[in-house]
Image 1 (tube, rainbow, N blue to C red):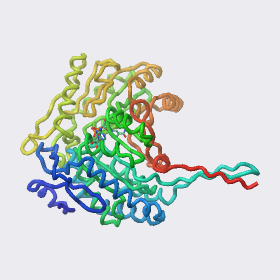
Image 2: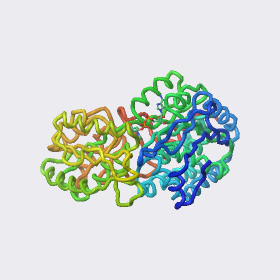
Image 3: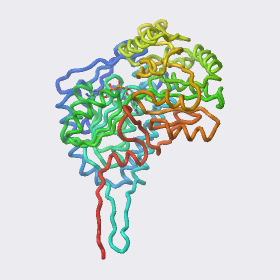
Image 4: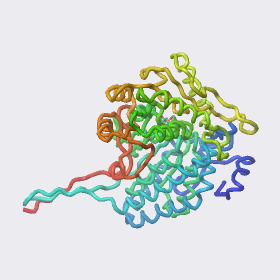
Length: 498
Ligand code: NAD
Protein backbone atom coordinates (compact mmCIF):
# COMPACT_ATOMS: atom_id res chain seq x y z
CA UNK A 1 0.00 0.00 0.00
CA UNK A 2 1.23 3.49 -0.76
CA UNK A 3 1.79 5.62 2.29
CA UNK A 4 3.03 9.17 2.41
CA UNK A 5 5.98 9.81 0.17
CA UNK A 6 8.17 12.85 0.12
CA UNK A 7 7.48 15.55 -2.43
CA UNK A 8 10.20 14.59 -4.90
CA UNK A 9 9.17 10.94 -5.08
CA UNK A 10 5.40 11.15 -5.22
CA UNK A 11 5.18 12.26 -8.89
CA UNK A 12 7.58 9.47 -9.89
CA UNK A 13 5.52 7.00 -7.91
CA UNK A 14 2.35 7.97 -9.76
CA UNK A 15 4.18 7.66 -13.08
CA UNK A 16 5.34 4.10 -12.61
CA UNK A 17 3.00 2.48 -10.08
CA UNK A 18 -0.66 1.60 -9.87
CA UNK A 19 -2.14 2.74 -6.55
CA UNK A 20 -4.64 0.46 -4.77
CA UNK A 21 -7.29 2.46 -2.96
CA UNK A 22 -8.78 0.26 -0.25
CA UNK A 23 -11.74 0.43 2.08
CA UNK A 24 -11.13 1.38 5.71
CA UNK A 25 -13.44 -0.64 7.92
CA UNK A 26 -13.04 -1.20 11.66
CA UNK A 27 -9.54 0.25 11.54
CA UNK A 28 -8.35 -2.12 8.78
CA UNK A 29 -7.61 -1.56 5.12
CA UNK A 30 -9.14 -4.11 2.74
CA UNK A 31 -10.14 -4.50 -0.89
CA UNK A 32 -13.78 -5.08 -1.81
CA UNK A 33 -15.14 -8.47 -0.74
CA UNK A 34 -15.33 -9.80 -4.29
CA UNK A 35 -12.03 -8.23 -5.30
CA UNK A 36 -13.65 -5.98 -7.93
CA UNK A 37 -12.14 -2.61 -8.69
CA UNK A 38 -12.92 0.58 -10.58
CA UNK A 39 -10.26 2.45 -12.58
CA UNK A 40 -9.30 5.90 -11.32
CA UNK A 41 -7.99 8.39 -13.87
CA UNK A 42 -5.55 11.27 -13.59
CA UNK A 43 -7.47 14.02 -15.45
CA UNK A 44 -4.26 15.84 -16.37
CA UNK A 45 -3.09 12.93 -18.56
CA UNK A 46 -6.26 10.89 -19.07
CA UNK A 47 -4.37 7.83 -17.81
CA UNK A 48 -5.45 5.31 -15.20
CA UNK A 49 -3.28 5.59 -12.10
CA UNK A 50 -5.26 3.75 -9.41
CA UNK A 51 -7.68 0.92 -8.75
CA UNK A 52 -10.53 1.61 -6.40
CA UNK A 53 -12.30 -0.96 -4.24
CA UNK A 54 -15.70 -1.46 -5.91
CA UNK A 55 -17.91 -1.98 -2.88
CA UNK A 56 -21.62 -2.43 -2.31
CA UNK A 57 -24.15 -3.64 0.23
CA UNK A 58 -21.90 -6.22 1.90
CA UNK A 59 -19.08 -3.79 2.63
CA UNK A 60 -21.56 -1.17 3.87
CA UNK A 61 -23.00 -3.80 6.23
CA UNK A 62 -19.51 -4.53 7.58
CA UNK A 63 -18.86 -0.82 7.98
CA UNK A 64 -22.19 -0.30 9.71
CA UNK A 65 -21.49 -3.14 12.17
CA UNK A 66 -18.08 -1.68 12.98
CA UNK A 67 -19.56 1.79 13.45
CA UNK A 68 -22.41 0.45 15.53
CA UNK A 69 -20.04 -1.46 17.84
CA UNK A 70 -17.83 1.61 18.25
CA UNK A 71 -20.70 4.00 18.97
CA UNK A 72 -21.31 3.37 22.67
CA UNK A 73 -17.69 3.99 23.57
CA UNK A 74 -17.18 7.00 21.23
CA UNK A 75 -20.42 8.60 22.42
CA UNK A 76 -19.18 8.41 26.00
CA UNK A 77 -15.65 9.54 25.23
CA UNK A 78 -15.05 12.82 27.04
CA UNK A 79 -15.21 15.85 24.79
CA UNK A 80 -11.60 16.74 25.78
CA UNK A 81 -10.46 13.38 24.40
CA UNK A 82 -12.46 13.75 21.20
CA UNK A 83 -10.91 17.21 20.87
CA UNK A 84 -7.38 15.79 21.26
CA UNK A 85 -7.84 13.16 18.56
CA UNK A 86 -9.49 15.52 16.06
CA UNK A 87 -6.84 18.16 16.73
CA UNK A 88 -4.13 15.53 16.14
CA UNK A 89 -5.75 14.67 12.79
CA UNK A 90 -5.64 18.39 11.88
CA UNK A 91 -1.95 18.58 12.82
CA UNK A 92 -1.12 15.45 10.84
CA UNK A 93 -2.89 16.83 7.76
CA UNK A 94 -0.75 19.95 8.15
CA UNK A 95 2.45 17.97 8.55
CA UNK A 96 1.67 16.05 5.31
CA UNK A 97 0.42 19.14 3.49
CA UNK A 98 2.63 18.84 0.41
CA UNK A 99 2.05 15.11 -0.20
CA UNK A 100 -1.71 15.59 0.19
CA UNK A 101 -1.69 18.61 -2.13
CA UNK A 102 0.13 16.61 -4.80
CA UNK A 103 -2.24 13.67 -4.39
CA UNK A 104 -5.31 15.94 -4.66
CA UNK A 105 -3.97 17.63 -7.76
CA UNK A 106 -3.18 14.25 -9.32
CA UNK A 107 -6.66 12.93 -8.55
CA UNK A 108 -8.70 15.95 -9.67
CA UNK A 109 -6.57 17.63 -12.35
CA UNK A 110 -6.81 20.93 -10.47
CA UNK A 111 -3.70 23.11 -10.19
CA UNK A 112 -1.23 22.26 -7.48
CA UNK A 113 -1.10 25.91 -6.37
CA UNK A 114 -4.83 25.61 -5.60
CA UNK A 115 -4.69 22.34 -3.67
CA UNK A 116 -1.80 23.80 -1.66
CA UNK A 117 -3.54 27.08 -0.97
CA UNK A 118 -7.14 25.94 -0.51
CA UNK A 119 -8.00 22.22 -0.41
CA UNK A 120 -5.52 20.84 2.09
CA UNK A 121 -5.33 23.95 4.20
CA UNK A 122 -9.13 23.81 4.58
CA UNK A 123 -9.21 20.07 5.35
CA UNK A 124 -6.95 20.71 8.36
CA UNK A 125 -8.99 23.78 9.31
CA UNK A 126 -12.19 21.70 9.25
CA UNK A 127 -10.77 19.22 11.75
CA UNK A 128 -9.33 21.95 13.97
CA UNK A 129 -12.54 23.96 13.93
CA UNK A 130 -14.75 21.01 14.86
CA UNK A 131 -12.24 19.72 17.41
CA UNK A 132 -12.88 22.95 19.30
CA UNK A 133 -16.63 22.64 18.62
CA UNK A 134 -16.54 19.36 20.55
CA UNK A 135 -15.35 21.41 23.56
CA UNK A 136 -17.67 24.36 23.14
CA UNK A 137 -20.95 22.90 21.95
CA UNK A 138 -23.75 23.66 24.41
CA UNK A 139 -27.50 23.34 24.56
CA UNK A 140 -30.37 25.58 25.64
CA UNK A 141 -32.46 25.80 28.78
CA UNK A 142 -35.90 27.38 29.13
CA UNK A 143 -37.04 28.64 32.48
CA UNK A 144 -40.75 28.73 33.42
CA UNK A 145 -41.06 31.33 36.18
CA UNK A 146 -41.69 29.81 39.58
CA UNK A 147 -42.70 26.49 38.11
CA UNK A 148 -40.20 24.45 36.17
CA UNK A 149 -36.98 24.37 34.20
CA UNK A 150 -36.55 22.80 30.78
CA UNK A 151 -33.19 21.84 29.47
CA UNK A 152 -32.33 20.40 26.08
CA UNK A 153 -30.13 17.37 25.95
CA UNK A 154 -28.27 17.07 22.67
CA UNK A 155 -26.90 13.61 22.22
CA UNK A 156 -25.22 12.05 19.18
CA UNK A 157 -27.55 10.30 16.75
CA UNK A 158 -25.66 7.02 16.27
CA UNK A 159 -24.21 5.79 13.00
CA UNK A 160 -24.42 8.50 10.34
CA UNK A 161 -23.67 8.48 6.60
CA UNK A 162 -21.50 11.09 4.86
CA UNK A 163 -21.34 11.18 1.05
CA UNK A 164 -19.25 13.74 -0.83
CA UNK A 165 -18.56 14.87 -4.43
CA UNK A 166 -15.45 15.14 -6.60
CA UNK A 167 -14.91 18.87 -6.92
CA UNK A 168 -13.32 19.56 -3.50
CA UNK A 169 -12.60 16.00 -2.40
CA UNK A 170 -10.80 16.22 0.95
CA UNK A 171 -12.17 19.68 1.74
CA UNK A 172 -15.82 18.56 1.58
CA UNK A 173 -15.26 15.04 2.94
CA UNK A 174 -13.72 16.48 6.12
CA UNK A 175 -16.37 19.24 6.29
CA UNK A 176 -18.89 16.46 7.05
CA UNK A 177 -16.84 13.89 8.91
CA UNK A 178 -15.23 16.27 11.40
CA UNK A 179 -18.51 17.62 12.88
CA UNK A 180 -20.12 14.16 12.82
CA UNK A 181 -17.25 12.80 14.92
CA UNK A 182 -17.02 15.90 17.11
CA UNK A 183 -20.68 15.47 18.06
CA UNK A 184 -20.00 11.86 19.12
CA UNK A 185 -21.39 9.92 16.17
CA UNK A 186 -19.68 7.11 14.36
CA UNK A 187 -19.50 7.34 10.59
CA UNK A 188 -19.86 5.33 7.41
CA UNK A 189 -18.50 7.61 4.69
CA UNK A 190 -18.15 7.44 0.93
CA UNK A 191 -16.07 9.86 -1.11
CA UNK A 192 -16.66 10.27 -4.83
CA UNK A 193 -15.47 7.32 -6.90
CA UNK A 194 -14.03 9.89 -9.33
CA UNK A 195 -11.61 11.38 -6.76
CA UNK A 196 -11.17 8.93 -3.86
CA UNK A 197 -7.46 9.20 -3.22
CA UNK A 198 -7.12 11.75 -0.43
CA UNK A 199 -9.97 10.10 1.54
CA UNK A 200 -7.83 6.97 1.51
CA UNK A 201 -4.84 8.96 2.76
CA UNK A 202 -7.05 10.51 5.44
CA UNK A 203 -7.88 7.02 6.72
CA UNK A 204 -4.15 6.45 7.27
CA UNK A 205 -3.94 9.75 9.12
CA UNK A 206 -6.89 8.83 11.36
CA UNK A 207 -5.19 5.56 12.21
CA UNK A 208 -1.96 7.39 13.04
CA UNK A 209 -3.88 9.89 15.19
CA UNK A 210 -5.32 7.08 17.30
CA UNK A 211 -8.95 7.31 16.22
CA UNK A 212 -10.45 4.10 17.67
CA UNK A 213 -11.35 1.35 15.14
CA UNK A 214 -14.88 1.59 13.78
CA UNK A 215 -15.38 5.26 14.63
CA UNK A 216 -14.74 6.28 11.01
CA UNK A 217 -15.31 3.76 8.22
CA UNK A 218 -14.70 4.64 4.58
CA UNK A 219 -16.39 2.52 1.94
CA UNK A 220 -15.36 3.19 -1.65
CA UNK A 221 -17.41 2.52 -4.74
CA UNK A 222 -20.03 3.79 -7.13
CA UNK A 223 -22.94 5.94 -6.08
CA UNK A 224 -25.49 3.48 -7.41
CA UNK A 225 -24.06 0.63 -5.31
CA UNK A 226 -21.99 1.76 -2.27
CA UNK A 227 -23.72 5.15 -1.99
CA UNK A 228 -27.20 3.71 -2.36
CA UNK A 229 -26.46 1.00 0.21
CA UNK A 230 -25.61 3.71 2.76
CA UNK A 231 -28.84 5.59 2.02
CA UNK A 232 -30.95 2.42 2.20
CA UNK A 233 -29.38 1.03 5.37
CA UNK A 234 -32.06 1.07 8.08
CA UNK A 235 -29.50 1.52 10.90
CA UNK A 236 -27.91 4.67 9.46
CA UNK A 237 -30.03 7.40 10.99
CA UNK A 238 -28.80 10.56 9.32
CA UNK A 239 -27.36 11.35 5.91
CA UNK A 240 -25.16 14.31 5.09
CA UNK A 241 -24.86 14.54 1.33
CA UNK A 242 -23.17 16.97 -1.05
CA UNK A 243 -23.55 16.47 -4.79
CA UNK A 244 -25.87 17.01 -7.72
CA UNK A 245 -29.52 18.03 -7.39
CA UNK A 246 -30.80 14.92 -9.22
CA UNK A 247 -28.86 12.65 -6.85
CA UNK A 248 -30.17 14.64 -3.87
CA UNK A 249 -33.75 14.09 -5.06
CA UNK A 250 -33.15 10.36 -5.42
CA UNK A 251 -31.63 10.22 -1.91
CA UNK A 252 -34.59 12.12 -0.44
CA UNK A 253 -37.01 9.74 -2.19
CA UNK A 254 -35.41 6.76 -0.44
CA UNK A 255 -34.52 8.30 2.91
CA UNK A 256 -37.64 10.37 3.63
CA UNK A 257 -40.02 7.41 4.18
CA UNK A 258 -37.40 5.95 6.54
CA UNK A 259 -37.53 9.24 8.52
CA UNK A 260 -33.79 9.77 8.30
CA UNK A 261 -32.39 13.16 9.15
CA UNK A 262 -31.18 14.71 5.88
CA UNK A 263 -28.76 17.45 4.99
CA UNK A 264 -28.55 17.99 1.23
CA UNK A 265 -26.04 20.41 -0.30
CA UNK A 266 -26.80 20.43 -4.02
CA UNK A 267 -26.17 22.22 -7.30
CA UNK A 268 -25.98 25.92 -8.06
CA UNK A 269 -25.82 28.53 -10.81
CA UNK A 270 -24.83 31.57 -8.87
CA UNK A 271 -25.54 35.15 -9.95
CA UNK A 272 -22.87 37.82 -9.72
CA UNK A 273 -24.41 41.31 -9.78
CA UNK A 274 -22.15 44.20 -10.72
CA UNK A 275 -23.56 47.68 -10.10
CA UNK A 276 -22.05 50.76 -11.72
CA UNK A 277 -21.24 52.31 -8.33
CA UNK A 278 -18.80 49.56 -7.32
CA UNK A 279 -15.01 49.47 -7.46
CA UNK A 280 -15.03 48.06 -11.00
CA UNK A 281 -11.41 46.91 -11.14
CA UNK A 282 -11.82 44.93 -7.93
CA UNK A 283 -15.12 43.48 -9.18
CA UNK A 284 -13.49 42.36 -12.43
CA UNK A 285 -10.46 40.86 -10.69
CA UNK A 286 -12.58 38.85 -8.24
CA UNK A 287 -15.24 37.92 -10.80
CA UNK A 288 -12.56 36.27 -12.96
CA UNK A 289 -11.45 34.23 -9.95
CA UNK A 290 -15.05 33.46 -8.99
CA UNK A 291 -15.76 32.23 -12.51
CA UNK A 292 -12.69 30.12 -13.25
CA UNK A 293 -11.09 28.90 -10.03
CA UNK A 294 -10.95 25.10 -10.10
CA UNK A 295 -12.00 25.27 -13.77
CA UNK A 296 -15.38 26.63 -12.65
CA UNK A 297 -16.05 23.41 -10.74
CA UNK A 298 -16.97 24.98 -7.39
CA UNK A 299 -20.61 25.01 -6.35
CA UNK A 300 -20.07 28.66 -5.31
CA UNK A 301 -18.62 29.88 -8.62
CA UNK A 302 -20.29 32.95 -10.07
CA UNK A 303 -21.20 31.73 -13.54
CA UNK A 304 -24.10 34.10 -14.26
CA UNK A 305 -22.62 37.58 -14.41
CA UNK A 306 -25.07 40.48 -14.62
CA UNK A 307 -23.65 43.97 -15.17
CA UNK A 308 -25.43 47.32 -14.95
CA UNK A 309 -25.87 48.81 -18.45
CA UNK A 310 -23.72 51.90 -17.95
CA UNK A 311 -20.56 49.85 -17.17
CA UNK A 312 -21.37 46.75 -19.22
CA UNK A 313 -19.01 47.55 -22.13
CA UNK A 314 -16.11 48.48 -19.85
CA UNK A 315 -16.62 45.48 -17.55
CA UNK A 316 -16.95 43.04 -20.43
CA UNK A 317 -13.92 44.20 -22.40
CA UNK A 318 -11.64 44.23 -19.33
CA UNK A 319 -13.03 40.90 -18.08
CA UNK A 320 -12.48 39.22 -21.47
CA UNK A 321 -8.92 40.62 -21.68
CA UNK A 322 -8.11 39.09 -18.29
CA UNK A 323 -9.66 35.75 -19.20
CA UNK A 324 -7.66 35.62 -22.45
CA UNK A 325 -4.51 35.97 -20.34
CA UNK A 326 -5.33 32.95 -18.14
CA UNK A 327 -3.19 29.93 -18.91
CA UNK A 328 -4.51 26.36 -18.89
CA UNK A 329 -2.50 23.15 -18.74
CA UNK A 330 -0.16 21.04 -16.58
CA UNK A 331 -1.55 21.35 -13.03
CA UNK A 332 1.96 21.30 -11.54
CA UNK A 333 3.04 24.36 -13.55
CA UNK A 334 2.51 27.36 -11.26
CA UNK A 335 1.88 29.67 -14.21
CA UNK A 336 -1.33 27.82 -15.18
CA UNK A 337 -4.43 29.25 -13.54
CA UNK A 338 -6.56 26.37 -14.84
CA UNK A 339 -5.77 22.66 -14.86
CA UNK A 340 -7.83 19.80 -16.28
CA UNK A 341 -11.54 19.23 -15.70
CA UNK A 342 -12.37 16.12 -13.75
CA UNK A 343 -13.34 13.56 -16.39
CA UNK A 344 -13.80 12.97 -20.08
CA UNK A 345 -17.58 12.82 -19.74
CA UNK A 346 -17.56 16.11 -17.84
CA UNK A 347 -15.40 17.69 -20.56
CA UNK A 348 -17.94 16.57 -23.16
CA UNK A 349 -20.78 17.99 -21.07
CA UNK A 350 -19.00 21.38 -20.91
CA UNK A 351 -18.34 21.34 -24.66
CA UNK A 352 -21.99 20.47 -25.34
CA UNK A 353 -23.08 23.57 -23.38
CA UNK A 354 -20.81 25.76 -25.49
CA UNK A 355 -22.51 24.29 -28.57
CA UNK A 356 -25.89 24.94 -26.97
CA UNK A 357 -24.89 28.56 -26.31
CA UNK A 358 -24.06 28.98 -30.00
CA UNK A 359 -27.41 27.51 -31.03
CA UNK A 360 -29.16 29.81 -28.56
CA UNK A 361 -27.62 32.80 -30.33
CA UNK A 362 -24.74 33.48 -27.93
CA UNK A 363 -21.48 35.11 -28.99
CA UNK A 364 -18.30 33.44 -27.77
CA UNK A 365 -16.18 36.40 -26.62
CA UNK A 366 -13.22 34.15 -25.78
CA UNK A 367 -12.42 30.46 -25.35
CA UNK A 368 -15.04 27.98 -26.48
CA UNK A 369 -12.76 25.05 -27.29
CA UNK A 370 -11.40 21.83 -25.86
CA UNK A 371 -7.63 22.13 -25.40
CA UNK A 372 -4.91 19.59 -26.13
CA UNK A 373 -1.71 20.57 -24.32
CA UNK A 374 1.59 19.10 -25.39
CA UNK A 375 3.50 15.93 -24.48
CA UNK A 376 2.27 13.80 -21.58
CA UNK A 377 -0.74 16.07 -21.07
CA UNK A 378 -2.12 15.64 -24.59
CA UNK A 379 -4.55 12.94 -23.44
CA UNK A 380 -5.84 15.07 -20.53
CA UNK A 381 -9.19 16.83 -20.29
CA UNK A 382 -8.80 20.56 -20.72
CA UNK A 383 -11.21 23.29 -21.73
CA UNK A 384 -10.50 26.93 -22.45
CA UNK A 385 -12.03 29.46 -20.07
CA UNK A 386 -15.04 30.66 -22.01
CA UNK A 387 -17.08 33.87 -21.91
CA UNK A 388 -20.45 34.05 -23.66
CA UNK A 389 -22.35 37.24 -24.49
CA UNK A 390 -25.69 38.20 -26.06
CA UNK A 391 -27.84 35.61 -24.33
CA UNK A 392 -31.12 36.04 -22.51
CA UNK A 393 -31.10 35.32 -18.77
CA UNK A 394 -33.80 32.65 -19.18
CA UNK A 395 -32.04 30.53 -21.82
CA UNK A 396 -30.70 27.10 -20.89
CA UNK A 397 -27.01 28.13 -21.06
CA UNK A 398 -27.66 30.91 -18.55
CA UNK A 399 -29.88 28.86 -16.22
CA UNK A 400 -28.60 25.27 -16.12
CA UNK A 401 -25.60 24.20 -14.06
CA UNK A 402 -22.59 23.64 -16.35
CA UNK A 403 -20.05 23.33 -13.53
CA UNK A 404 -17.14 24.16 -15.80
CA UNK A 405 -15.11 27.14 -17.08
CA UNK A 406 -18.03 28.81 -18.86
CA UNK A 407 -19.74 32.07 -17.89
CA UNK A 408 -22.36 34.33 -19.41
CA UNK A 409 -22.37 38.13 -19.08
CA UNK A 410 -25.74 39.85 -19.41
CA UNK A 411 -26.57 43.57 -18.94
CA UNK A 412 -29.33 44.84 -16.64
CA UNK A 413 -30.98 48.15 -15.83
CA UNK A 414 -31.57 48.98 -12.15
CA UNK A 415 -32.11 46.99 -8.98
CA UNK A 416 -35.50 45.63 -9.91
CA UNK A 417 -34.23 43.95 -13.06
CA UNK A 418 -31.03 42.80 -11.33
CA UNK A 419 -33.14 40.92 -8.80
CA UNK A 420 -35.46 39.51 -11.44
CA UNK A 421 -32.49 38.10 -13.37
CA UNK A 422 -30.66 36.85 -10.28
CA UNK A 423 -33.67 35.11 -8.76
CA UNK A 424 -34.63 33.45 -12.00
CA UNK A 425 -34.19 29.66 -12.12
CA UNK A 426 -34.29 26.63 -9.89
CA UNK A 427 -31.11 27.16 -7.87
CA UNK A 428 -30.49 29.30 -4.78
CA UNK A 429 -27.05 28.60 -3.38
CA UNK A 430 -24.95 31.77 -3.39
CA UNK A 431 -24.87 35.27 -4.89
CA UNK A 432 -22.40 38.12 -5.19
CA UNK A 433 -23.22 41.82 -5.16
CA UNK A 434 -20.75 44.54 -6.15
CA UNK A 435 -21.76 48.00 -4.96
CA UNK A 436 -20.49 50.84 -2.80
CA UNK A 437 -24.02 51.84 -1.83
CA UNK A 438 -24.65 50.48 1.65
CA UNK A 439 -28.44 50.68 1.48
CA UNK A 440 -28.46 48.87 -1.83
CA UNK A 441 -26.20 46.14 -0.47
CA UNK A 442 -28.67 45.49 2.36
CA UNK A 443 -31.69 45.64 0.05
CA UNK A 444 -30.18 43.13 -2.36
CA UNK A 445 -28.95 40.81 0.40
CA UNK A 446 -32.42 40.67 1.85
CA UNK A 447 -34.19 39.95 -1.43
CA UNK A 448 -31.84 37.55 -3.15
CA UNK A 449 -33.23 34.01 -3.05
CA UNK A 450 -30.20 32.08 -1.83
CA UNK A 451 -28.39 30.85 1.27
CA UNK A 452 -25.17 32.88 0.99
CA UNK A 453 -24.61 36.47 -0.18
CA UNK A 454 -21.16 37.93 -0.66
CA UNK A 455 -20.98 41.72 -0.92
CA UNK A 456 -17.81 43.02 -2.58
CA UNK A 457 -16.07 39.65 -2.12
CA UNK A 458 -16.25 35.97 -2.97
CA UNK A 459 -15.47 32.78 -1.03
CA UNK A 460 -14.64 34.70 2.12
CA UNK A 461 -15.49 31.94 4.59
CA UNK A 462 -15.99 31.94 8.34
CA UNK A 463 -16.59 28.35 9.41
CA UNK A 464 -19.06 29.47 12.10
CA UNK A 465 -21.59 30.76 9.56
CA UNK A 466 -24.51 28.71 8.18
CA UNK A 467 -23.62 27.19 4.82
CA UNK A 468 -26.15 25.91 2.29
CA UNK A 469 -28.78 26.80 -0.23
CA UNK A 470 -32.46 27.30 -0.90
CA UNK A 471 -34.72 26.12 -3.77
CA UNK A 472 -33.13 23.21 -5.68
CA UNK A 473 -29.73 23.93 -4.10
CA UNK A 474 -30.57 21.94 -1.02
CA UNK A 475 -32.11 21.43 2.37
CA UNK A 476 -30.43 22.23 5.68
CA UNK A 477 -27.27 24.10 6.59
CA UNK A 478 -23.73 23.04 7.37
CA UNK A 479 -21.10 24.91 9.39
CA UNK A 480 -20.74 26.03 13.01
CA UNK A 481 -23.59 25.35 15.42
CA UNK A 482 -25.95 24.43 12.56
CA UNK A 483 -24.09 21.27 11.69
CA UNK A 484 -23.48 20.34 15.33
CA UNK A 485 -27.25 20.54 15.78
CA UNK A 486 -27.79 18.45 12.66
CA UNK A 487 -25.52 15.72 14.00
CA UNK A 488 -27.25 15.59 17.41
CA UNK A 489 -30.72 14.63 18.55
CA UNK A 490 -32.38 17.16 20.86
CA UNK A 491 -34.41 15.94 23.81
CA UNK A 492 -36.28 18.33 26.06
CA UNK A 493 -36.29 17.53 29.77
CA UNK A 494 -38.88 19.39 31.86
CA UNK A 495 -38.42 19.40 35.65
CA UNK A 496 -41.26 20.74 37.77
CA UNK A 497 -39.97 21.98 41.08
CA UNK A 498 -42.94 23.72 42.57
P1 NAD B 1 -23.07 13.35 -7.74
O1 NAD B 1 -24.41 13.66 -7.21
O2 NAD B 1 -22.97 12.63 -9.02
O3 NAD B 1 -22.23 12.49 -6.70
C1 NAD B 1 -21.97 12.93 -5.38
C2 NAD B 1 -21.71 11.73 -4.50
O4 NAD B 1 -22.91 10.96 -4.41
C3 NAD B 1 -20.66 10.77 -5.02
O5 NAD B 1 -19.93 10.23 -3.94
C4 NAD B 1 -21.47 9.67 -5.69
O6 NAD B 1 -20.82 8.43 -5.74
C5 NAD B 1 -22.67 9.61 -4.76
N1 NAD B 1 -23.91 9.09 -5.37
C6 NAD B 1 -24.28 9.11 -6.67
N2 NAD B 1 -25.48 8.51 -6.81
C7 NAD B 1 -25.87 8.11 -5.58
C8 NAD B 1 -27.02 7.45 -5.08
N3 NAD B 1 -28.01 7.07 -5.87
N4 NAD B 1 -27.10 7.21 -3.76
C9 NAD B 1 -26.11 7.61 -2.93
N5 NAD B 1 -24.99 8.22 -3.35
C10 NAD B 1 -24.87 8.48 -4.66
O7 NAD B 1 -22.31 14.75 -7.80
P2 NAD B 1 -20.85 15.02 -8.36
O8 NAD B 1 -20.91 14.98 -9.84
O9 NAD B 1 -19.87 14.19 -7.64
O10 NAD B 1 -20.61 16.53 -7.86
C11 NAD B 1 -20.98 17.66 -8.58
C12 NAD B 1 -22.23 18.27 -8.01
O11 NAD B 1 -22.07 18.55 -6.64
C13 NAD B 1 -22.59 19.60 -8.66
O12 NAD B 1 -23.96 19.63 -8.94
C14 NAD B 1 -22.24 20.61 -7.59
O13 NAD B 1 -22.97 21.82 -7.66
C15 NAD B 1 -22.56 19.87 -6.36
N6 NAD B 1 -21.87 20.44 -5.21
C16 NAD B 1 -22.60 21.12 -4.28
C17 NAD B 1 -21.98 21.70 -3.19
C18 NAD B 1 -22.76 22.46 -2.15
O14 NAD B 1 -22.20 22.72 -1.09
N7 NAD B 1 -24.00 22.80 -2.38
C19 NAD B 1 -20.60 21.57 -3.04
C20 NAD B 1 -19.88 20.87 -4.01
C21 NAD B 1 -20.53 20.30 -5.09
